[in-house]
Amino acid sequence: MNKLTKYITTGAMALSILPFMASAHGIDNENKGEKSEIKSYFGEHFDRDEQNEHKAFTGTVTAISATGFTLKDANGTVYTVTTANAKLVRPFAGSIVLADIKINDKAVVKGTLTGTTIAARSVQVMPANTHPAMTKGTITAVNGNTITVQNTHLGVVSNVTVKTDANTQVTKDGQTATLADATVGTTIKVKGLWDETLNVLNAIRINIRTMFSK
Image 1 (spheres, rainbow, N blue to C red):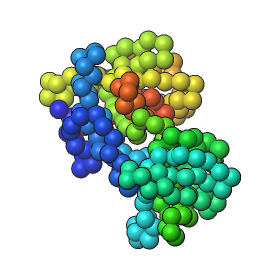
Image 2 (cartoon, rainbow, N blue to C red):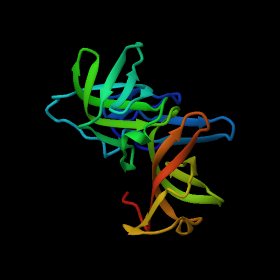
Image 3 (cartoon, one colour):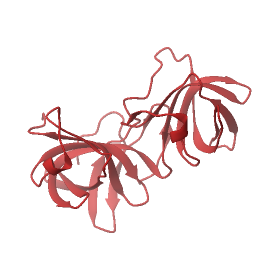
Image 4 (cartoon, helix red, strand yellow):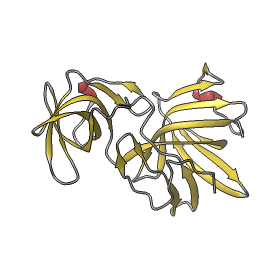
């Protein structure tokens, strides 16, 4: 099994949202007999507050307005989120605008609570049934927009199915590249959104490297 960072635990594939990070899980794809380790966390673009001056709220977007959206948490509490002064982001994808937020998106909101209204400072959203994740390894197969990435550690082989699209950002050793550069035998690092229903990693960023540090 791959060496896990302090943010990672193993277990069944399920999302547990915490402020600024999520746990990662060993993935057992029973349909394909594949096992893999996915490191999962909220993306590096999400603004952190080292002074803990703003509280974090998690939940599901239930409605959109001209000034923000409503957020329903796991306990059923509904908050009105105002975003006029907020930084809005998606994991690994940089800044977005209010129009990019959709009903049923999952959201992590950091801001100041007054009654049930949150004056947001930072908002990160992602589609339902997904969570941020990353993996790295060697490409063993390319089939259209689907890439198989394999990790081998202490004799244990792990495979991750990676889906790409026209919006996937690709670099090679820090320089702009294309998906055509992601060939069998290439070593890559992938950041994206793990689809908890299909058990695939939807790639947002792919970094092709000639060699990864041990």
